[in-house]
Length: 137
Image 1: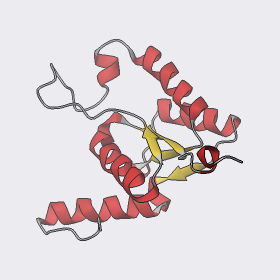
Image 2 (image 1 turned 90 degrees about the vertical axis):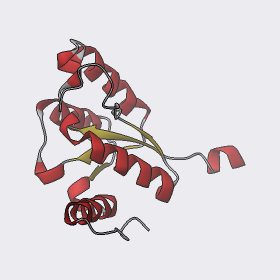
Image 3 (image 1 turned 120 degrees about the horizontal axis):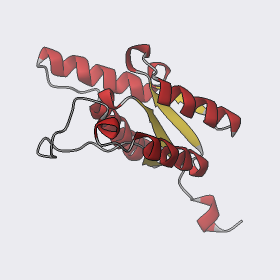
């Protein structure tokens, strides 16, 4: 086995509702930083992006089906998926992605049962309290 194959980073696709896009960004950062994996998922858009809704951007822009299909192609490339099921919420698209990943026998990690989710939840709680957060270290 060559060194290139032995050191290939794991690819993890983040799945979940766009209402948790900020959590996606933090989870992706921590997975890449702490685990050395490549993450794929949704994109956090800046506030200046035209008419950014709180969630369901793809529906607002009329590209939901196209992007749902593209997200399945990401799962095809993935070694595992990480479901951002904050407050145990899973929408229809995410449910379909989970079923698709299960059909491919991809391992599934859950925000609510993962050390990354615990770190992000601690950061979120600290931010709401206005306290500095040591949980990210």
